[in-house]
Length: 223
Image 1 (cartoon, one colour):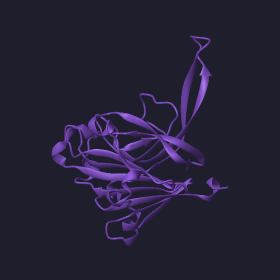
Image 2 (cartoon, one colour; image 1 turned 135 degrees about the vertical axis):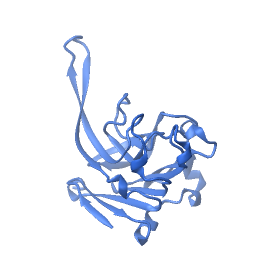
Image 3 (cartoon, one colour; image 1 turned 30 degrees about the vertical axis):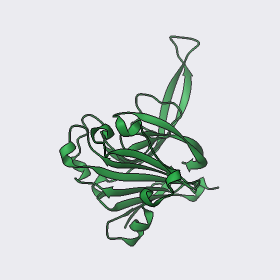
Image 4 (spheres, rainbow, N blue to C red; image 1 turned 180 degrees about the vertical axis):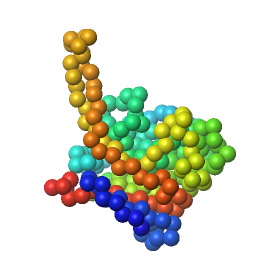
């Protein structure tokens, strides 16, 4: 196990042989089927995102989220306003990359919400233009306590081999705040400026099949 303290979260990385890792994976196949949904649109498209309302408040960097946006590219966007730079900040990313769920009928983006945890699983998804690398299966679990778990079931190649030329490749957390400033050109309009204030970047060389990462919020967020 490797542990890092990032001032807002403590992250722990568990390798394939560690018992704790097995307890972190949420088995959607064994879950109550009424709580698991396969997202029909995201499972059959590329570079798309869809907003989902949670059944509970999820504390992210200390502020409660009631809705998130699932993206086909292996991440969850947590900002209020959807914009072109979704991948830049305000994300929970187990493995952000250029995944194309529409490539295979076996590829799905599915999610579970049981009232205390919200899980998104990218299941048997392939990289756009690099389908010969094989399929990836991984998940992000957002617990009502504020804990975040990334689980990796199937990572067929080292993440460092994934090209970032068409889409960012990264794993970790990022949050930001938005400021509305008057636009000098159009008096009545506002210009949005997004300021990132914290990110946790995972060492992607630590991501492998049957590994997991657990983020635990530090006490300042629970006060």
